[in-house]
Length: 185
View 1: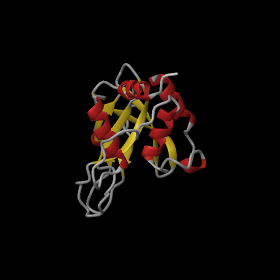
View 2: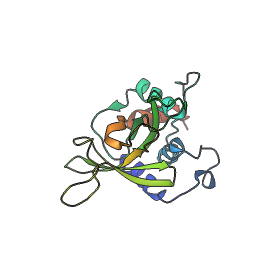
View 3: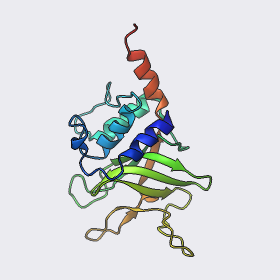
View 4: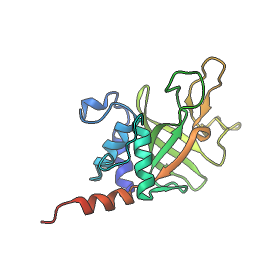
């Protein structure tokens, strides 16, 4: 199932406008995750977990927590959560909580992750290594270890994916709920 979700996310790389594919999902990071999961028959927004003022990322996180889907060992198809990727409330502080999600596409034995996400330039890949969260590039090869996920602004420096990482959620608990919710034939 995770491989199918990761493959669907991979198919969306390069898409600039998610509404062109499905007008029922938002044209943001949560829309990408929802489309990838819907390809596996999972409706991520089915159920409770909404509190006043929550953004879509928080809704997904609360639902993942309620289903017992949160964990720390990534696999392809997992949702990856990030915090403080932008100044959501525009107060100049890093106090915005969970603000971004993506789909784990690949995990290497060395701990490098490739993630598919919907950023400001459309659906793209990004890199993250939680063993080296503060390293942007390899010194000897210039290969990217962690991509930048939050731009520098004002007095604040830019931040890397590994620095803003907040957790993973696996698809299996959502799939179990989806199977139970289907009517018997």
